[in-house]
Image 1 (cartoon, rainbow, N blue to C red):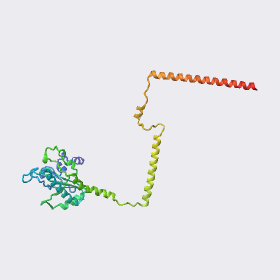
Image 2 (cartoon, one colour):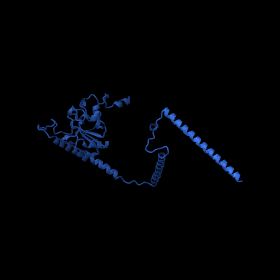
Image 3 (cartoon, rainbow, N blue to C red):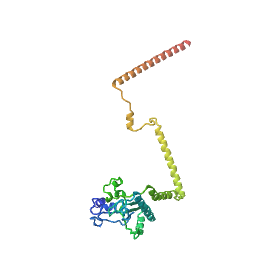
Image 4 (tube, helix red, strand yellow):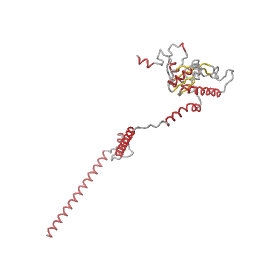
Length: 303
């Protein structure tokens, strides 16, 4: 029973916990939802609810005075906010991802999800951001159950085919330019590469050095023996370079069998060659015997 409940936790089959809150960290029903919204006590992700204020929050593409806004200006406003928030949150730890929703529904508009590398860093950020203000508005911060944003984002929105628009129940994440992402997140890559390249030299004891040299000798000896055995196998009489040694390839290389008439003709030819060889051998033996007898007669006559 416990395994079954654990397998359906946070899914549509779970009649106790809200699957949308588990995946997205927000639910359109809010406190009126019939299922539980269990807030985690600790998480690497924090949620800053409704923090980002779009310049066209009333009507998309239009400002508060009813004037159309250039999309480039909207993107500039968003990237300024993104960079400002990133620099502030970076004080509390390494940021794995910073995602801002472009949805228009009340429970998701302007939501900011910050995923830190460690849970302690997220707890530190939560502690320091609680009770603070941004642009004259209080910051509402909580731990979020979202750790995999691939399950939370709208894939149709990424393909520009979502027909629900800003009121979709899945995340529509606003994107920043490649240069800004490289500028903000590239510092972590440089820091990690620098820490790996500047790692302190480890002084090994005599036992460790002797063990390493001893193991290296054995490794080189094993490699030498293995290379010799491989070379002997490759130069064996039955082996030909460049050909496969699989049983199937051997069958493929087997000669084509002749017909019955060709076999009979080849056997008759072998028999004739054999008879000729025997006759030739008999003639040679006879000549040799005659020659030896004549030599003996001459020898006795001389005596």
